Image (cartoon, rainbow, N blue to C red; front, side, top):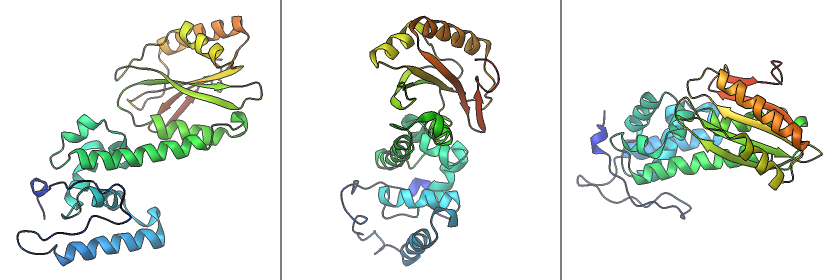
Length: 253
């Protein structure tokens, strides 16, 4: 089995249609077993899609472009072992990714491109849509963008009078178990967007979506500020790796 210390990254071929051309190694050309393995993975992906592949093979496909002349299976498995899963690898902060031997700028860039594309696709399904009528898509977007983050993030979804999503903003970032939120700033941004309603969203990196007393208190303060301004607070969602908590559904709003 290859040692991850053997990995070396090549310049990123970001704008080429194909992988960077192979160049001879010290011992000759790229070993045929690596070429054949990569061809098999690509063929299986094209014929069966992602469902036909385990996580480590899907991760290999991403790593191919960053490391075009090495066996990347050991690195793919190491990343999954280190972070706990495919989604966690994509969501991991760049400094933490670079702590893994064999990961440099090329690997980080490829992973973050895939992560950004995933978030953008999920966001496109809800932005400009009637949110209350596409609730599943909204939850999918929130899970995709927030569930696997390692620090707390607080987002606000602003809606117009028809409950169409007109803006989605990150209001604050915090630590692993706390994010500062200022009700005045939340209300101020709603006025600036000319929003008629909003949905609060934040994540719990621990995975436990039970709201803290601080979460409940902050939500009450935001609701009071919204009531004064005639803005409806539809919900406050707490997002975790295994699910979500809705203040509205649980009777806290």
